[in-house]
Length: 291
Image 1: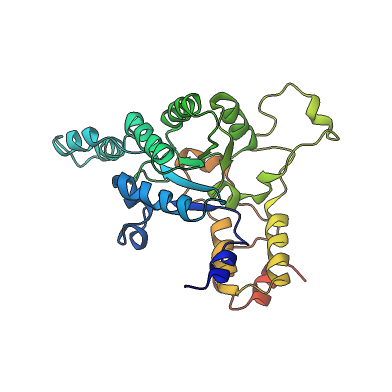
Image 2 (image 1 turned 90 degrees about the vertical axis):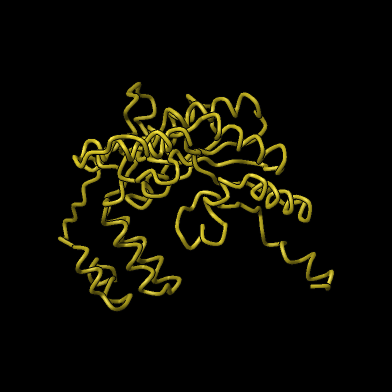
């Protein structure tokens, strides 16, 4: 567009730009986007630098994953692979083993060559199944070293922070600047509720207070009902709402060791089948007793 006014106004409603370099889905990687950028550092840096050069008044950040070890992948291929589940699991873990040095080198390039104003890091490599725990130890090492070298660059962490206690402890240990929540927020959006000085339990020394049974958490039925009220308020398409509700009612993609802490108990006996069979927003509201 050669209209200077349009060019000047095109980003006035944009606060910042965040480049997703972590999505492993084929629709992203097939076009060289998403996690495909993790193996093309030159292109990744060019994307960031182009934005910084052409829109200098807007911050540019990148969301990445831990990079995997090529050596681990090679050694895995040469293993004597048996068909028992233990060896298959070990193969999976080896193939996605995080490489701290490669990750740090990639982050350095994004900051120094690409001009990234902030970096978010997911604690899994490409291929690291979500039903296996995130690699918190490797993530911690990456964050600590990055914050030591670039204390002025905000670093965000992501991956399996299912309780407020977990992510506040992790931020304190690593000096990371923030946390991103995906599946934990879907399980119970009230994980974002913060303690205030008016809460009596703020004076306690119990370090596990804001865990899975945190007094800040609302029951899941109330969370879903409030979500549906917002859906009605903004007239969302029922198919989108139905998909989100099914995700909120399932922990199938959460780490297996977590499942016992993620119950799905609803006093109204609502089921995923009831939600999935609903053909309108009104029908979804009836399932959840929302007027």
